[in-house]
Length: 584
Image (cartoon, rainbow, N blue to C red):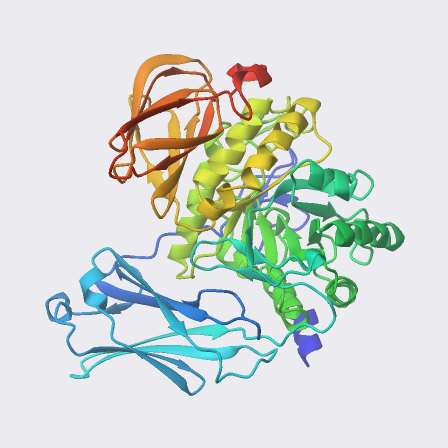
């Protein structure tokens, strides 16, 4: 019955005219007429009364028997679009407020001041013990109940808890941190049981073009995304070549992002591929739909594939790449733990299709970047929109990954990005909360390859993963220069600050950035060649280079230390290494 439901349960994406080719729901061939694609998410209608919205979710996507600690994230917020109506005046008195989390009969009791933080946002991590639970493949149902002694209102929220048995096949386990969005892994190749944060930084590639795994690791990359070399519903990879490559990845510890783009709707093939791959030491996560929204795959195709994979292999997350600006996002994103976004804004005409010789607008055309402006900010706009869509559909946060453009001089794109643009697109993704970077595609130009090899050492290793995966992304504001994008991640007394100049021309005016605390020392310059001064929590700089990027660590001063610091360094990716577009 399950198989029949999966096989025959596919639904059409929308009612397009027969014989019309579409992309993101839009007709694009000169012989086709424009029609409204539909499928656009809209902000939910606002309530006339304030609503209390509470969500509960496990901190980690899964737990295993060797885990000592576990916790839930309880998040409450004041909303006009999701939740239940509540009396604000009465809710200020939370003396009889009771929160209870129930795990199929096992209850946790927590007195929590929801009302006190609900005007903005309240987030609390609730620890609990796993000792009374039995590891199993089927997730535990979890219910959060909020009550008052007066019984005037009751609030319920639900989630699932995966407490899985230990693996006996030698395979790996990958956790997704629902608080900060990062991945946690154990390096089985080195026989360690320690959970380590992993910030993926790499490329898509085919087996025919794949680099030597050891050489790839030596260049600083930590994963690789294999694109199938066959393009039908029944064919995947050349299995001999695949196994040879994966054997090498297993030996050296290069993580693999396994791609089912052509076969994920063939559930027999999916079952066979999971059986073949799931015990690999190098398997990091699965990847099913590649631009299913662009292709107009059945609306529930990603969800059906997701359900099957989670049943067969609950130890690894599933990812989907979405291409469209706003086309059935809720349906396609439902079939994934991680959402990727591929926005390619370099060398593209976003109003006229150079391939099909037609216009591109909200209801017609295909220009290579859906509803884009042809600027690097298209990347951050899309990631911000995807985060907004998650709140509109009432979903818990899902990690986002970026897919920067590392190609050109083909189809819609009249040139390849410069090395400086490649860094900008990557850092812009991370500044807007992306938790992984997989560029399209390897091999790329020598200039980009040289630059990303340098950047991989910074992003995938050292201090950066601890900041970006150990704290929430904080948006910071640059004053004195409009086209700048700044973000920070604070852990303890230190903060990682990423500063991007998005304009091409150089500039000479003074820029200041107010940090959220009185940081007084620049302790490390991880990337960039500019000079920043730091005084009592304010970064300042006079003049800069177009498409410049600076990545620095600042720190609060100890009692007997001076309160001003300046740090200048060519560092990794200094000015002398960049040639095009002003460079870094």
